[in-house]
Length: 262
Image 1 (tube, one colour):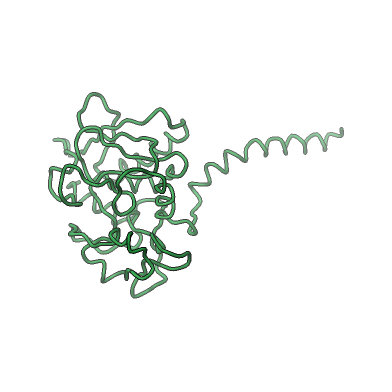
Image 2 (cartoon, rainbow, N blue to C red; image 1 turned 120 degrees about the vertical axis):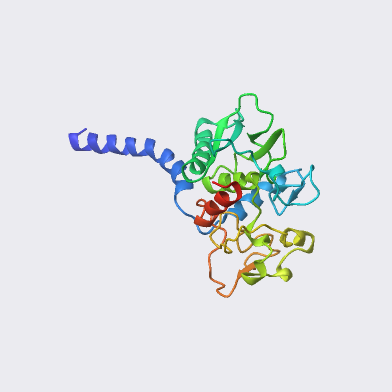
């Protein structure tokens, strides 16, 4: 074999070994506007036995309404101004998956007063688990609080942040009390049995504007009865993008600041 051929063979072998890792990393990092956050979450949640509201919110067991306004459902803030949330991560997750979860949590550290710390013996804590779907309770519910991230469809930076935001007390953007000024719900394109997922809530909007770019906003086709028919249409511009999954928006971060007094 000539020196040139040997060099070419070595380069090809090196490339073949590097590609799988690059593809695994790029799956999350490269924006994919064809698959919005809601599609991924609802697809993952198809097989769950949990009672879920709005697609990925565990039905409340300790309070009557799906809302989190009072201090009773917020995570406690320390005298140092930080909100430290204990957590555990299931051993079912691989090292790479744990790194993804850790990376999503650390994004809160750098931009808000929220801090996630490995649980010692605290009573209230978030337990990241590999259940059947992507879902969370709304706000702090007390005791071991499951936040499910199914390994087959939920380990994405934006999805992890989406579910953590639910655990902090935030609802979906399109259920805001003022949503009718910003989006049109196309009820005719929604399965009547799924219509309850679009009911408006008595939300605390924290004096912030409606945010199409929120990590908490559904995509245009959520719960649509037929492919290509939108269940949500932004107004007045129907082409406005909603349902992104890359990470928290400016207003997502500002709402954490306002709700927790960061």
